[in-house]
Length: 398
Image 1 (cartoon, one colour):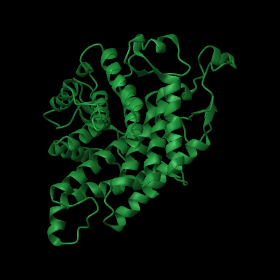
Image 2 (cartoon, rainbow, N blue to C red):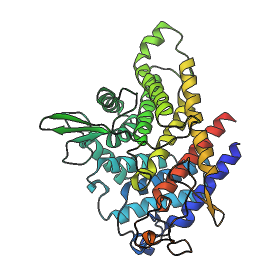
Image 3 (cartoon, rainbow, N blue to C red):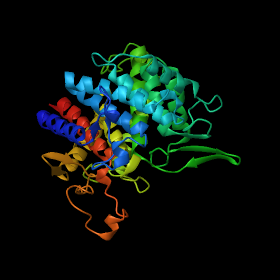
Image 4 (cartoon, helix red, strand yellow):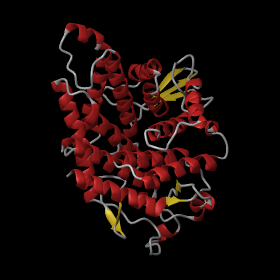
């Protein structure tokens, strides 16, 4: 099955490359992903700049290259980084949204694990910008520069970056704030807090990707804390001395167990297929959300220490959610020219995007009132992410 899932991930990569990958304005050694397929004229020209979608496109390419490194993949990643910087037309830090910058920083950092992709001044500037953006009163990042809305989308990806780049204390401060303020009664995480004149106002909305990024941040923190006290990845805590020294990591591991359990109970079918909550759109930005959750569930399945019955059970639940979701995604796909088109909802059949060799089938389609989610790059990237996650889990189980 390992080869099967790796092959399916390859097909997802090929589909995105064939339909979406394009040089920026014809410039050599650049690559970006057109945000729709079939694209309109403005999309062809990259008229609107989708900063964080391109960061997710980069992250998917890194997933594929880490799974099986090739010169072609590494070259395309380098071209994508070049394309992002040129299309941004100015410093990458000029973007006002900290979540966008965190996603790009995270993907770029991961890319530096590959041969030929080096750290640059621009990456260092992004990291510093995230640190400098932390509000001195709350200790966390606002969603947007100058605003008083503090949310998971900005802070959890930043915490992953800080935990993996030697700033563990800052990562812990951010994740502790999330757990202190945003955990719901059902164990899931709310989106954020707005600071109003009348006091803090919790944004009572659940998004799948927020659960994923907090899992990712908590896992990186827990593993870093274990490493700090000399515990190997799966080394059991079998003495009082180790128990005391590893106590800090257990706080985050306990939260990982709780989130995975809550996701299985509240954000998946009884068969274990991830589904969108009511307030989560299947298109646009929302098209990416479930794929991000799947990515970090796979990380839990692979990297959570198997040193207790509770952890082993959590790893199994996370793996099941990934694999059942991937099976459902694949069984509901369309194929066009031998390559998959994925559905926005993984329990439903994929629909053929607009304009593919056909005119509109109704008046509402003709005037643009009926939107096909599958047309969005975000939806197809989410499917690719899920299949990369499944390939990792399948390799672990082989």
